[in-house]
Length: 124
Image (tube, rainbow, N blue to C red; front, side):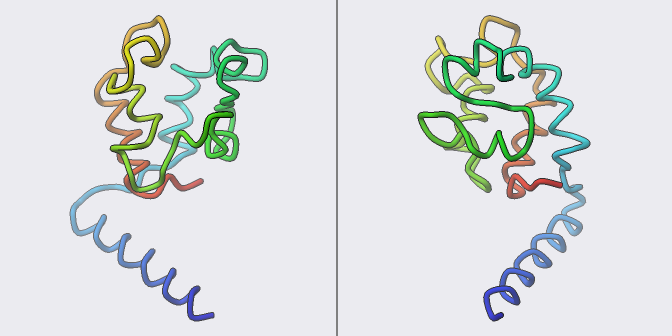
């Protein structure tokens, strides 16, 4: 019970901070999923090359949060070490920059992904 109260307080505090900063909460369904659909799902579906090579499915929040057979790709709250962000920003090895073999994501799309991760990578 105490943990739930603390967690509820933390969520309320985060919501107040976001509102105070004028920063809207990023929605997985409305903001993140369309980016994944446009730039990632060509390869990261069950029949795609990205899935065959890494085991990463990006068809749902649950699948994305499971990560790859090598480990998680999203660390909620941590954009510096979340592989998803590192790969789309080009901070990982150039041979695995995402989307692989294609133009980089526009900076504004990367910013949406970063804000979503910063805000806890929620399934909202």
